[in-house]
Image (tube, rainbow, N blue to C red):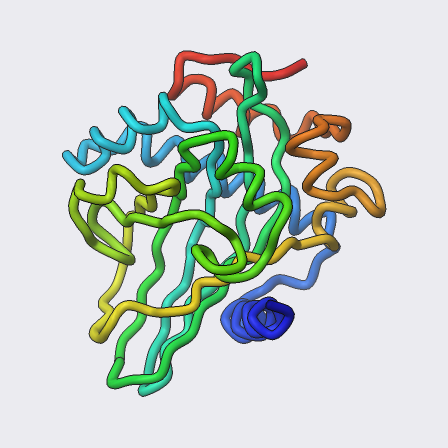
Length: 234
């Protein structure tokens, strides 16, 4: 599992280093939270018929992993990655604060092209949320959840995946030719968690214990609440 987490970190570093602005971890965390908010609003307001299913499933979701501008690139060797946030509902149905994560994947094969996709993963049960928080590594292997892709974009599929623990929706820009990427890995961004809250803050404290707060995430939480008819935790 450690090897897969290291792979994710390397892949994402390659993808984002060329375009990352020189700023502080705190600024990067705040920018990522705002990008996540815009991604949620874009999905909620989209007139794409595929987003009707997203809006219906969002109302039932217990958590969301939001990856703004998840990048794919390939020339013989395909890579995919990006930074995102995990936000979950509490037992009272209110939306909590975001924890920061990285997603990375890679595969070898005849692939060429590039794609940028706003991607939201809907976690459909408290167990799925807990599995992501308590583990890191490959989805479906190190993290014991089943993943189904629905809708146009990074991994187009059908509604036969509605029995999965995690549903993946994306809105993609660009072209990608080749097989689906394998080995999707999710790893914690402890640097961003520490910068946004306090040094040493963990996803468990943020998502499960709800002991970490930052009002700069309230607009993101309100956007999720607006799409689910819910509210945000105080």
